[in-house]
Amino acid sequence: ATRSGGTLILVGLGPAMVSVPIVNAAVREVDIRGIFRYCNTWPMAISMLASKRVNIAPLVTHRFPLEKALDAFETTKRGVGVKVMLKCDKDDQNP
Image 1 (cartoon, rainbow, N blue to C red):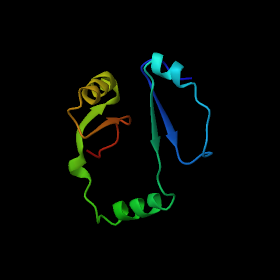
Image 2: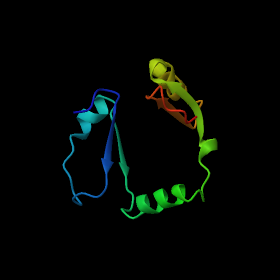
Image 3: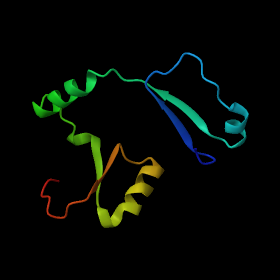
Image 4: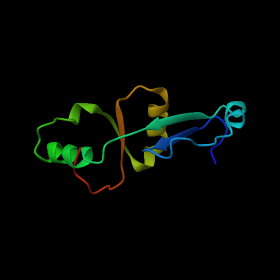
C-alpha cells in the first residue's frame, strides 16, 4: 500500500502486462515510477569508488549528525542539496 500523495517505485522488470487500479492511484494522487538498472553496474561502481577513479566528494553537499535528522530531511525536501548524509556514528572521524 502507498499513502495518498506517495510514490510507488517499480524496480526491475516484471511481467509485460500488469493489472493496476489506476483510478484509485489517480484519485489518491499516487505517482507510479519505474526504475531499471543492470545487475553488473554495482560491482563496476564499487570498483571505481575503491580505486578512487571517481571523486564523489563534491556530490555530498550536506552532512548532519543523527540528532539533526529532521534538519537533514528538511534540507532534502527543499531540494537545496545534491546528496544529504546522516552521520550515525559519533566516533566516526570521516567527514
